[in-house]
Image 1 (spheres, helix red, strand yellow):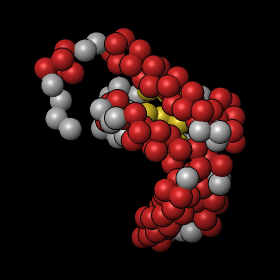
Image 2: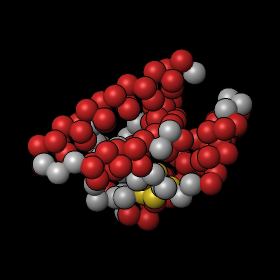
Image 3: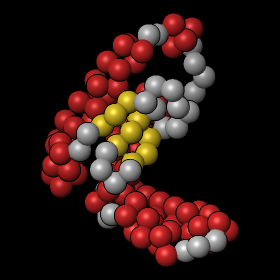
Image 4: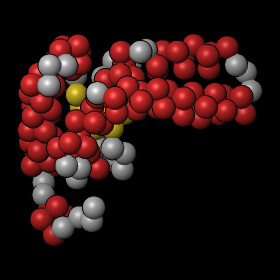
Length: 132
């Protein structure tokens, strides 16, 4: 989705307010959909808006980070993205990857593990979110 003139003129404060509004809406949607586990998890995690990144969303195992691309998505896509990230946290995917990386020595092996784990973990999580 291309940026409009209005998007280019927004301030960081307006972007943070838009991000907060999106997060509040997603919380309400999770509850309305009776997805209480994800709603409960979402209530307990910090969500940070990072304005100077090109990423959509990511997790570090303890928090969810959203970027500008997240705000350009429609509400259904935002809900899908947040569910996706919540399942990564629920399944401890970042911790599993970190444990495996700690056991490897070569840079090539670490890169293969990062890529392959990411693909497999995303496939598992997306399969669950799509079934919902």
